[in-house]
Image 1 (tube, one colour):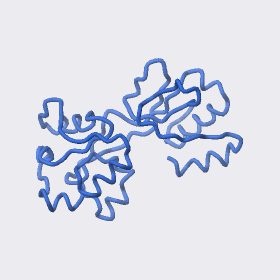
Image 2 (tube, helix red, strand yellow; image 1 turned 180 degrees about the vertical axis):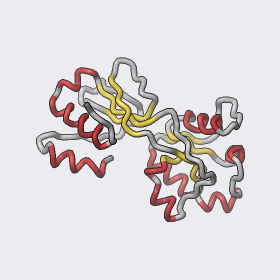
Image 3 (cartoon, helix red, strand yellow; image 1 turned 180 degrees about the horizontal axis):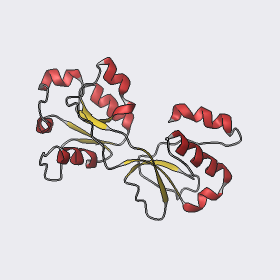
Length: 189
């Protein structure tokens, strides 16, 4: 989405945006945050949440880890590899459940809050992760990452635009909301 921000600035040059990474979740108490892009189920009490992007996912692994641990031939084989989790274990738990693999609602592995750090860990062979497919196309096409299974998986969570309900009264915030919904391919009316 950050590549598309230039088109917003061209349409609304008087509007300033401050992009900030916040691994701590959805929080508006700092007095400086008006809207957030957040990964989740859309349920943030007291806030308005609009779904933006739902990405297909798939386990992804580096060729070096496959060379070391062998190519997984069935979903349960992934439990023998180091699992890397983005933010929490929810997406992996859903993936294993959808593939009939019993996990006992808890998985081993490392939880990483920063998606860039997670991607670097997978690329360097430190573990297997669920990749958001549209965001890792280049790594898949170049062979830096391998999908051990061809079937896509749609997690229950997605990216949302989240904001206090009264924020939309501000013309600049409404313009940003309308623009980002349009960019996400949704009808914003």
